[in-house]
Length: 366
Ligand SMILES: [Zn+2]
Image (tube, rainbow, N blue to C red; front, side, top):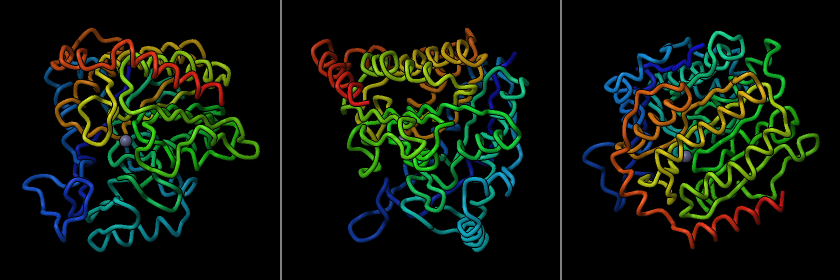
């Protein structure tokens, strides 16, 4: 069976407001000559372009999807939020939360972004595809039911999971979030539930500053079903794989899911402007190979990756290409032009030992 790749040019037309990097323009903050928020279309469009140039696109089953239906959205978001969002979108756009502006038509584009995730999960659960990648934009993992933040307007992954559950599919789901920022939205939505295990690997002390602690383990029936690993700044290839091998994969195996979803950000990449980690394209390849093997062992290979952050326009395409090579098993490659430079810049044995000890220390608190 094939690997699906869900994308739509219209998702690249989502536009933010008058920001320079993460700062609103005004006062002493001068507008940029080009670009605004770091969450801009280029990182995503250039990934698709690279796949077209290498030929990897031809090894995948490329599809678009309809917008997520209002019924789908209402399983996660209150009607009051959707109405407020749609009204502002229809009247030209604006800002409803924290650093999450949108232009006219932003509501429909966000619903399409969620729709790509819904279709990807549906196709994998019904056996139409082996696994899938949804190039969703705007991203979703920070979005709370009634409060958009961190560039996220709708909770794409939760919407997709709940749509599958409404059809009687996906009874036990793992959401692994390897975006460098804490998946606070996904955590909040599932904090009280024991049927969705949420795991987040993120940089300690990054956005959002007030969530993502290792002590946050869930509540009520959900206690024990939320796992946060706040990693030290500078964690590189070896540290990420140590976290996967010693914490993430054993937790997933114990849970016995029937679907694994990855909140797939590439902002742990070494050149990302919004983080200070040292992951490489090879790190993402190895993490994908591991989670794919886990899915094959535990749930007949049912695995969906949904795009989240990643703000290095040059490097995200190579990290994404390596991820999709690993997901699909394709032998069409895009050699990492930064591999040599970033290998030299890895923490090295002395700091890797420190980072591993930190991860082991966190694991003992779970
Ligand atoms: Zn992120």
